[in-house]
Length: 145
Image (cartoon, rainbow, N blue to C red):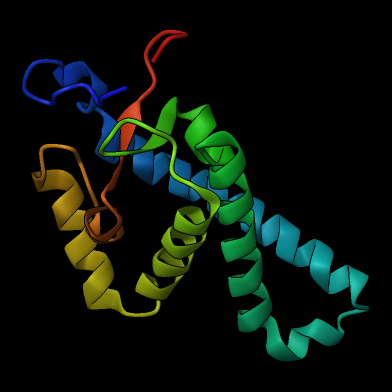
């Protein structure tokens, strides 16, 4: 299995930057909801380390969804899928590293800006963490793609 070539099949990558932004917003809402559930379940004791709880839930949520489905809920709703540059769905360890890098980049603003610029300019619409891990997001078209 290989990825569609961005020059020969641009329809797989044309809306990816916008869809990634929408997927991120949806996943942020999911992560906040899961964090609130965590707060309630710990009788609000976890409020003392809320950033750690939020980060752990964000990394856990993304890792599980990407490892199992190749997409988070936000990606599914925006018709995106996450793949390696070889076309295969990455393994669970790659999903964990991707998720940890994603969370880490949000704590270092210049890295996040660089990643967003890369998504706009690279042929495969890769962010910084995609480039490092040799992964990408592409538009899911039809049942066989």
